[in-house]
Length: 266
Image 1: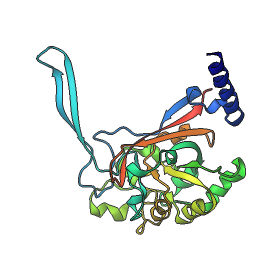
Image 2 (image 1 turned 90 degrees about the vertical axis):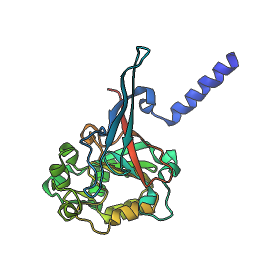
Image 3 (image 1 turned 90 degrees about the horizontal axis):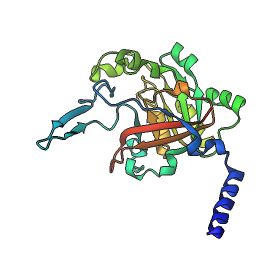
Image 4 (image 1 turned 135 degrees about the vertical axis):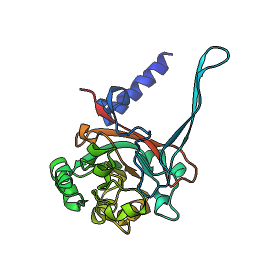
């Protein structure tokens, strides 16, 4: 027994040499970056259906105890969700094939909200990333990159969030919201070893995109995307630990996502 305790303590000491104790899961303050799924959940305008939550049972059983059970129906892409590589890469990973290590780990948050709120068609550029790095240093390897545009504050108001209150195909030409520019996406995959990207808008690409080049670049390089994130204003620029676990849909191109961020406790 004494030998086992000694080996355990030795292991902890070894870990302490390589990891800041402040980022151990037990010492983190957790921030929920997910919007709830309900009747107000926002989907791409041409989705025929939104979130449906149907009551199968709700009340006292014949034996006198309470019991509830519900059925749900939802498109893959809506609310806070994950884009799997296969969404825009023919032979890319489906949701159930994405390695867990691509969805969990250290993260940084790049705030472009001043520019994005002043221009609904703003595309995050290489300069935005490089300016962040001038202050905080190069984005470390194996990092999840989050972008804050400030548009999370409009959710779930469709007009404020999408730039139009319309739904259906006629809404597509009127979409105006920021996204990640293709040049920035290419720079990240070519110059930084990132795990995934996320932002607080409906799409990795900006609203007026026709060819979804940013999706094609990031997902084509097996970098999952997290869309419609919440509460990014609560995050610092660095020192973030993210857990982003989607519903494990076999062969899914996307999935509802519960994503949380851990910060060192104050």
